[in-house]
Image (cartoon, rainbow over all chains, first blue to last red):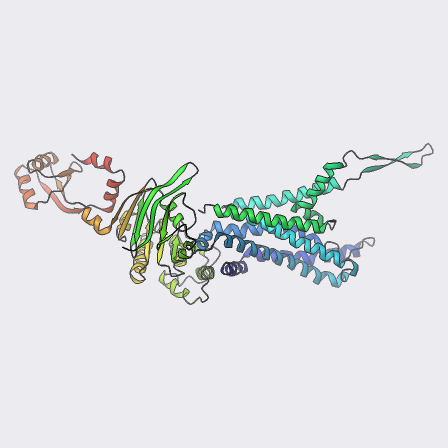
Length: 278
Length: 309
């Protein structure tokens, strides 16, 4: 396995998309605090801190992870180099895990590129995070890293089992967008108010409060519980919650992500073990 | 005889398609084994099985005496170098980087052998040129160089000269012969180009419908091949009459050409023909080629009957 890791990391160093992705995350990390700072200067009512926009990277991490895994692992099939590893006697489990580890490491590097760039440009403009919010920030960051492993594990499984690079790219990229859009939909459904405030206009022309009207679209009972579970469980929903810093069940979400990572890797290894390689 | 690879009743099926059926083959150590068969006859499937890319659904095979069911087979595969179908190389890397990557995969710490390998396959001057800009022949040679990285004892080449220009074919042929003679590498080579294969192979295996029809050494093939005299005559009917009267075994090829298989002197044939007024335009000694042997073996009966009187 160490030989494969060594070979994969050497290939990562020469991977064009990885470097483009890293530069993109650095530029994003610099631009977000700078634009927020200028917004704050332009509109006096708008106040921003270092926390605003910090977790935007979770969305880009998910998308770049899908693109990176499909290209990095997909190349093994499109260029036929997967055969070189198998012919030389490496076990399929080692090949699978080496690809997963290197992909996860690459996604971590992309995240850290953003975080470092963000802090370097944001701290001089806004100062550091407030001391009391630091544990929360660290909790969100930890949760986002576990989530990145889960997304990488899913994309690696797709890339290892689908022997056509183009199909892998379509499945992974389309899949992650569908998951994120579904996350946004679930978030909006759960965020609906239970009651609408109502007002009535008196004879004297003045508006007065009336009894609130129940919202018919509000999710109640078992349906709400199912939606809440999905919202914490699915990676796309976690992306939405973490990027908006609205997550409340960080431990639960991290546990679900770990579960997804382990089960998708287990299933992927089993199926890859039986796969006929062309 | 010591065998590098033996296959015993090997089978491989994909859903409803039987790609290999009760296949048995034996590749002797030090041989250049020419693997001959039609498209879809199962050549590449067998190569995929022995390279560990796929698993057999029936039967077994041994590599250097190690059965494929043993765990040790994975380690034994380290003695194989292979180019299956297309050369497996990273297109965004140079020839040198591709070899370095393969060295890392094999766990070879020093890159000292790389310049020698590049020289061996004639790619020492490719510099920073990426593999995606290589010609087909260059890719094929780089594929062989990658296969040679771990100093294998057994080289498996699937259609290595497909699509190559004449110069490329000669270079690959010389490379294979060099590897076999100088490094004692056993080679399994599948090819459709029988004339080319006949210049290389020391042994042949003929496969049809996923089954080995015949295994034969080049020496045995030589002995089995029927030698004949090919005649060009002015009147084929007179020739046939004279040949019948001389009780010769012959085969009419066209209105002017015929093969005589019975051993006879040129004079013994030309004089009776001249007496009957049949002019002999040319006489050539003719050997049965690998191609005609292949045609005869794998459905060539119809072909022969068409031209034999």
